Image 1 (cartoon, rainbow, N blue to C red):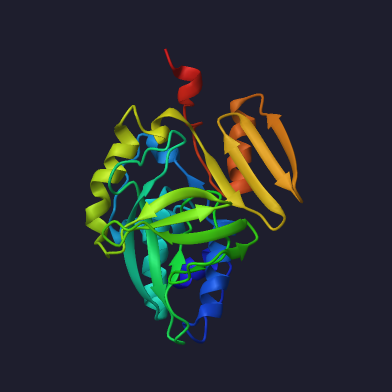
Image 2 (image 1 turned 90 degrees about the vertical axis):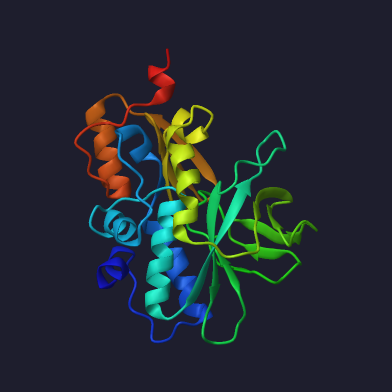
Length: 259
């Protein structure tokens, strides 16, 4: 766990309070990328706590929501937070919900009595800070305006960003092993967007940086720049220099190899 804190550039907090949680989430988003490289490198996604932490700390990697949020839950519990794993289903552009256990988010309770917080370091572009889980009004964040809405179905909740639903959460805690089917589906199914695309992205101090195949996208202070990397050496250097990921080969981009 000391290695984990060092990985995200954080000191061990004196108290597991809401301020520490905010700091830890932001640091995690700025250092641990959301990436699906394992899907295209033939690496198994192992949903076991030691394996998840080892991938992020020893392997200097990131991962899908199951991996990033799963590992972060281990760290937060070690620091004294109470953490539950909540399954979610992502709202598609066609209005349909994804598969069960489509997403994994965290419900975190600090020791300071500040209430329950929705924490998510595994959804790509999402809230920089924890969201008040029991608040039903708009919640401002550097990433936009967020709102948690009751659906009226079994206590489920929809999380909105900028007025658009992002994912639906079950308001019931689950075990890490429950998400194995979702992780397997996303890493193997031709219908999963993770098998159809290649992405590695993280938050930066002034924006975001994303490597998708050969395209490197940098956003700073709202200005977006795109650059196509010419060869494998440039791609490997981008993974190393921008994300701290050292690879011995370039993950195959399914958009280039299709057919």
